[in-house]
Length: 170
Image (cartoon, rainbow, N blue to C red; front, top):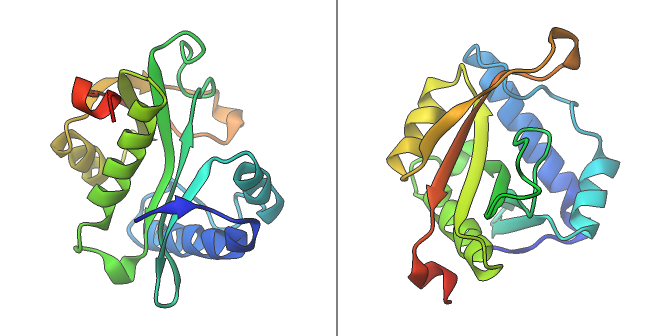
């Protein structure tokens, strides 16, 4: 079961993200870059209650952020009836064990528990594997968000999933 992250988890979250950034780079995917997020930013996000982690034998095996709005990627996030999943990560050593699905289920339940009727997330538009994964988990493509070339951001595929009444009544 995932738990709210503690400030002490910040280095492990950063290590997991950097390891996945390296793995992405080795596959020609530029979604994340090593060192892109400073430790103090992750600590601030933890202090704000955004991060949730799944512990493993060697530290954090999976993590994600759950947000009530995401105006950087979703222009209507302040008025939409949705919660947002960001930074979903699973250690490569645990790949194929269904942890990604467990993290998504947890985040969706958390979003539904906050009263939102849908869950939203994004990924690099040029990441076909992740896009296919999210579609397989019931997320529908809602569009692609482009950013100015000098922003340092990638074009993002925007996905949304309606949460059923059972999830919202838990």
